[in-house]
Length: 197
Ligand SMILES: C[S@@+](CC[C@H](N)C(=O)[O-])C[C@H]1O[C@@H](n2cnc3c(N)ncnc32)[C@H](O)[C@@H]1O
Image (tube, rainbow, N blue to C red; front, side, top):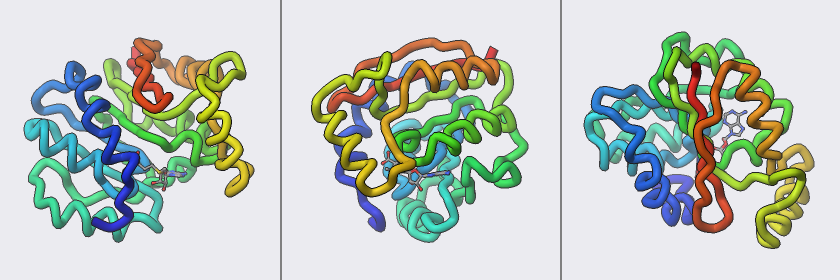
């Protein structure tokens, strides 16, 4: 597998277990920032009656396409080029669920804002939004290891960084989402869920 991520391998089973109750046969899922496609492959293998549309920025598409082609899954089509900041990249069709893991702390805050500005292109009433990753609460890290992770993120890209839950929630609410839940996940991560009302 190209771009294999050990952390993705470790967390995919717990994310799937936590999200299992959200999936309904026939659902169309859009994943943002799929990278290697490990989540796409894991979810669509385990839930064959959903359709999982992966995506990522252009530079990662070749590896992602190759990994998905090798997996030979009927419910996991070729990935879309989707840079969240590029309005014209966003598909014009609504999805039932939008999933993204470990992306908000990698992209700049400006791009997080763009993600929320553009996400309504792929939403309809009832669409779910699930965001997995580390978050801060009232400016505080949830662990010393996340505080160290922040230092590492900033050393490689000053625009990256662990986001404040409250600010992300505000962006979601501005776009018409209702906050549903925040689950504590292993390794100091969260699984945040909203629904378009
Ligand atoms: C740490 S990787 C996470 C990969 C995978 N989702 C996982 O959980 O292992 C961060 C991903 O965010 C993507 N990303 C960064 N900026 C982005 C943007 N502006 N639009 C879409 N994806 C972006 C990267 O290309 C990369 O695939």
